[in-house]
Length: 414
Picture 1 (cartoon, rainbow, N blue to C red):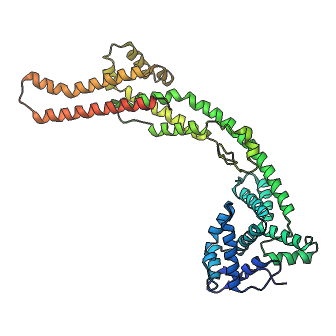
Picture 2: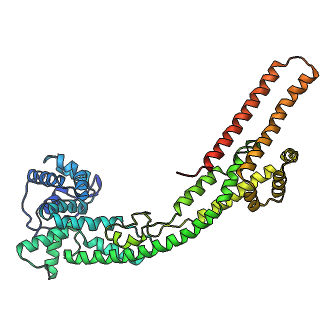
Picture 3: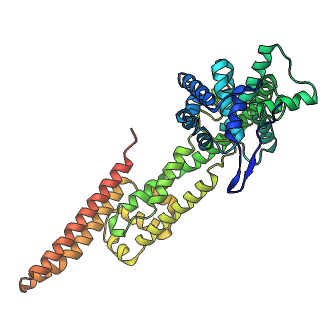
């Protein structure tokens, strides 16, 4: 019985392996026929061509991954194998996959689906037992096992029972086969993992969205604060807007904490999918509690900063000239720094009035020197007049842009 492919050392390169030997074993096991390199290259091209006719994703991936082998002649076959895989186990398994899809498409598809599930299932470090279950299944579900079972069935043989027979089968199918694992045993290991994983995921999914619903409610309660900040930011005479990035994060969190609605079908979906098809939530994913707390804090700080601007002597002096009782109440709220009351008082009408009132005060500041100059009958200061008018135009443009932005953000989503 020939020995299984094992790494060999080369003086000028890291530890590597003999790809031609691995290909010979994988193409002929368990009979171990003598093949020339040209025969191997031809056989691989035939198997890849057959796999390319199938629509399964695993076949498409095989054809793409082993494309260098399909293009290689006998002289370049070894180099092409290195390009495809740096490890002999992976190369052998891909060749077994080609053989399996050619000889037993249904069985190969089942193995491919099990391997996909095992690869896609995310298991956090905290789930050690679940990780062990996956490792056990991962070590048993392989195309090499399927080929071995099929060959035994074709020959009317039972699985190896003696220690020597086990060793011989391991040698025949390559060092990556760790024992006489039959597909039935592999399926049982896979089904055990999938069952445990599904239950863990369902419980986590339910707990995650219960907590997220509470966060969502907290965030919705702050909606009026967001609207108030947006309206205050439209008062361009107060200065540059504040907290705009915070508002953006707030809207993202509103969407991220909107409850998933596919829980009723989740158990069925997890037979083939490793995450909820609706929310794509990964097992063990962190919730948004920390992010929500941070954004609400920054939102409050942004409003406080605008209140501080409104409390400045200059702004207070301007607003105190108004005879509108709403402005008087607004000033009291600002002076008391009552954010909750502010969101109740600061509606669109009041913001519009404040915007106009502050704008008129700013315009008056720009025009008063010119009007005083006209009243005094001084010389024509064309340069000063042009400069004042340019500033006036800039003030008006900024005010209009601020008003338009507020209106667009207040419009309901379609």
